Image (tube, rainbow over all chains, first blue to last red; front, side, top):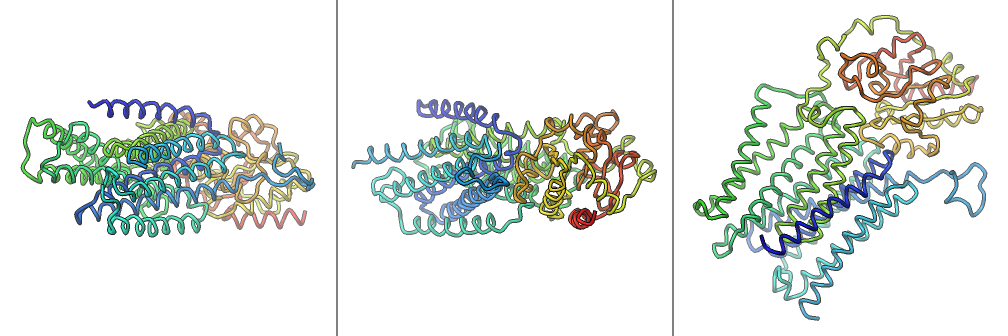
Length: 108
Length: 490
């Protein structure tokens, strides 16, 4: 295996471990937004779609790249927007007595 | 700037993007920072995508030295506008109750994109006689294409099941297992053939490698369908989570194929995320992953444990809206147990109204959220948050279970299996051992339910025949609205 591949494997392994650590700390209430957020992150595959679109030089590649681009863009844009929509709802409600200047940290 | 400098800058932009994904996920630890976490992650994504586009635009980039051809620009821009537009529209318009199937759909297209990226690179190299195909490329291409395709078809079936386009019950037809096994064998054999070919041990005729790859893709697509079909609707969240993890892995494999670090890092991150989530969900349901994947759960035909008919035909006590309203209005502590029925009936606003009304009368109100209430862990929290239920009132199962014995009334709205005491007592029951909410320990219980129809697990709930339980047969939203009106009269 080439040195480049070996270092890619090392990056792959470390990223997996980072993923375990980062995610195991998330409370259950945020699991749906988390799943959706993680879902939008793998939309990064759109970068791959752009790379194959740039390298494409025959009709088959054009089609594959276009569909990949379409799919990736839907994944990435839709994923982030729907996650944001979900998280928007997690705002804490204003305290019963509207105390000025103390709206963000309210409610325990 | 020379090419090397430009590539360095692009690489740094990718690394920044990858770092924002990690930071974004980390900020999702807490409801207070979760939204900014998602936005930071989105900003990193934008940076990575823009940097890639500009890089490809500069003449002299190693991918296509002439810079982007007009066709490539068209593919990228038009593909982005159409795909992104559809995604944006769906994300904006979807009802909150349909979130799980939308996530599954986005997951499907992500997996599809990863498979296409991996395949395209392979087809290019295989058609070019002068290019050398390494063993590792062959392995990563096949893994990326297979995992991506399984995710694509599997997620579509899962979304269809949740949307009701595909029946939610486990679908088993003669030969289903055989087809699944066959598809797996074809995939594995194809992988071996392509690796041997890349190693030079066998030589395939021109175009034969691509034919083998297409055969593998077809087998993987079939495998995805036959894998998900026999799994019941109740287990779908676990399946979607697993497939989400798969997509991450497929993206990482595609990253190996095209030697792109940001794909490798992000894919591995998501692979790990989905893996952890899947395990947490399976644990919450007290089901092993193997058990779920074998499928067939929730057929309503569970042998001796099914206990069909006999238990339900017995002493079910019906309660009128007015009686229920009086019980609630004069209670000290009320615990509301929302379930999927509430989500389906879009009753989250009605339940919040009832909760507020009771609070204003001095009743102590809390919401008991089972980890798998709704269709995904945390789904119920999202729905109730949408209806502005105060966050501190939402209690997780471990937190609230000891409080049921001190509650005057437990109001169960559209929840079923997660309240079934059989999970604690009946070793024969298919849900035996699943952590449940201790609703049966409350002083009295009111269940709003449309009929005596069993829940997703397809088994009877002995809670309904408990002498303390009053059944209020109504649609969740109508029942709650009637309760609100009745409590106002008290």
